[in-house]
Image (cartoon, rainbow, N blue to C red; front, side):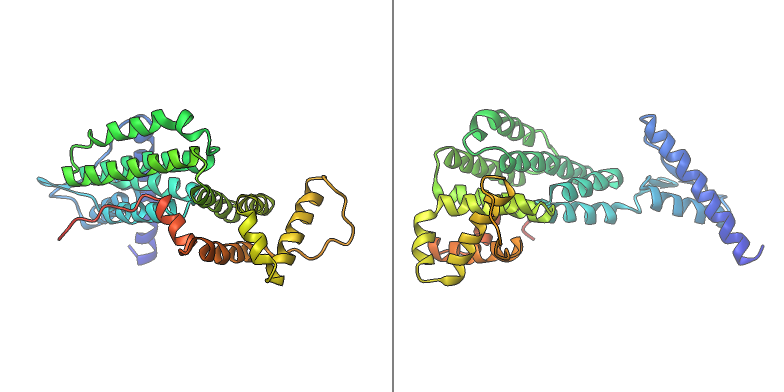
Length: 293
């Protein structure tokens, strides 16, 4: 058999095997690929490729291997990075892909935990600040209880995530109480999400809300800063025009939402004497637990 014929035979066999495995999974089965001791080389290649492509466990003798475990770890870590950048759709996709190929029980539990943390963080950022405690309090309690059920995670790791959830719940109470800096963090996260989703009008709205929340300090800075003064005036006129509140002729050119956000971040950093975007990400995120070596 020529190399091209062999390659075609292997590709067709792998394709058929993938369809069979996907069908079994659809019917709630957990398929496994088994290499027999008398399998010819061609069959071994087909089974190895099938296992790698589908994430199905590979059994050989008494050993069971998962060739896609490293891919599960990679997707899990990418999911965490996306989550902590508030890219919720991307994060959800990564965690779902990780769950498909993970076979290590500890990794499976971490993936499930982070899917719950994903839903919690998303709901906190997307909910009106004065409604989080009342409408989402039960979710905080549920996640805290579920952490204890992940028996493959040691007590130190469980406590770490429990404290992370408690910290976010404390932030929710501060949002509910109207704490200005925390509410500004919350609005900045909303703005960043809108920019990521290319929802630029929404991003301008969140920036204007940030201005209104910190109006006295922004106006004071704007008295000696022509760039900020013009940006605020144009932003107000732009939103009035876009929302139909006022018809404005010859509207000045609007700075991009990205550029305006950076201008705001610089001034917020000066107002609150902290790297404001960094602080916001620290407050509204779930950093992964790192085991001490």
